[in-house]
Image (cartoon, rainbow, N blue to C red; front, side, top):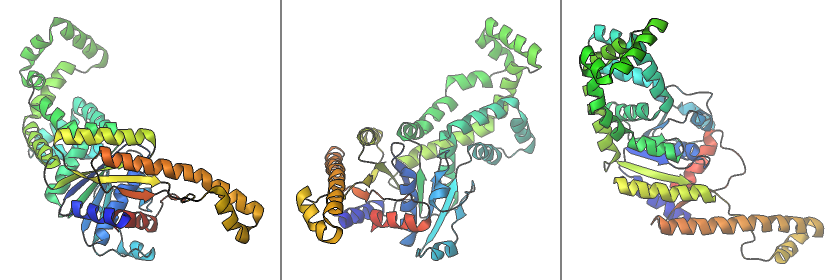
Length: 373
């Protein structure tokens, strides 16, 4: 069953250039994304794994002290030292949202003077910092860049917990709505008209602000958005490209969950939202599934079987402990079966609960074996 599920996952990801891992927090999604990328690289692909998780757990999962904000190839000697055989290439990066936003503007504005005006504007500094705090807009820009300008066979994208992941999915639409909406046109209008549209009361507030801080906020806003005219057109084009990419046959969304009740519920919610949005699903991964138990035997039968090796007292204690795990194993099996039916995923990939945390490449390779066999 496990081999069949892994084979089906391989088939569903065949030819996909972008794999987005989505799911609730605390289910090991970052580890699954890194293991999936490693598994695809082990099979010969040139694969990049990207995280927008501000906790930066991807570096730890790869056994590294830190990751750069541009794709960095994992040293083949590091892989070999941990007896991980990789036919292809594994690349990894973590998103620096503020720098990504700055890079977008720098690449889209070819005029050095206008670029200097934008980057030095106090409104831009505040706006770019705010965008860096949300991550989604920078993430879609980085995804577009990696897909368009780098020759990766597959890009595996880790995302924040599911509600934020939905923000990520909707970010292109929201951004286009702003770039093409009336609110932006107000700021692009001449400053006198902008002031009239804001109204006299707002003008008074801005006037007081200017006297107190020495910053002409109305003027700064008008100059800032006027200087962005060329950048806005380019950013809008990129955003439309990302919106198309997320719905492209080249892209798949892997739902990662655990058997716990709340993450399982989130997985069903995510699947429905992906289907509504017309985004292709690339499989269901149920992580941290308990499998150890009594396997149909009674506690007494197991205690009797263990008695010869462990003695009567220790054998009984081990059997009782297995009985506790048996409850979890039966619960997890029931959850996997229910999710399989609800999400119409006949062969979900099951990754067993591991006793140790995944902290190195060898550990990721073990998880990759469960994912892709």
